[in-house]
Image 1 (spheres, rainbow, N blue to C red):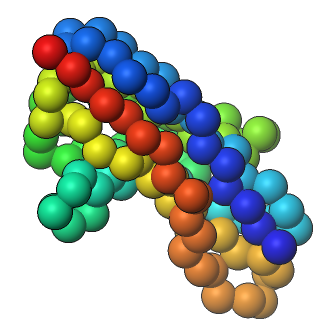
Image 2: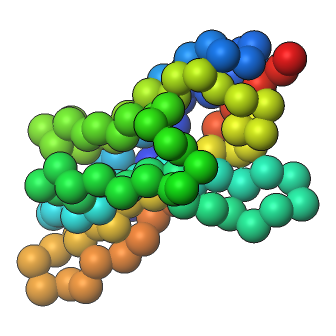
Length: 121
C-alpha cells in the first residue's frame, strides 16, 4: 500500500514563507511526476506545481516565481518552497504522485491527505 504523507503547512503572515514536504512510502517500483495541488473553500482544485522524475517543472500561472518545486528521488520526496505568500494562497495543499507498483502494471495517481496553509494579513 502506498502512502503520501505531507508536512509543513501552517499559519503565516502575508509576505512570509513556508516549505511543504511530501514523502511517498510503500512498495513503490517507480514514480514519474510528483506535484502539489491546492483547493480553497468554494473553489476547484488547481495545479500549483509538478516535477518529473528528470526534474522538468511546471507551475500554475498564479505562482509567478514565488514558489519552487523540487524532489529527492532517493527519498521519494517532493518539496514546495513558497515565498512571498499572499492571502489568496490560503488553501488545503495536496500532494500528488504518479506511481508504478510493478514493472508491468500501469501507473496510478495517489494523493496525500492535504495540509492547510493559511495566510493572514
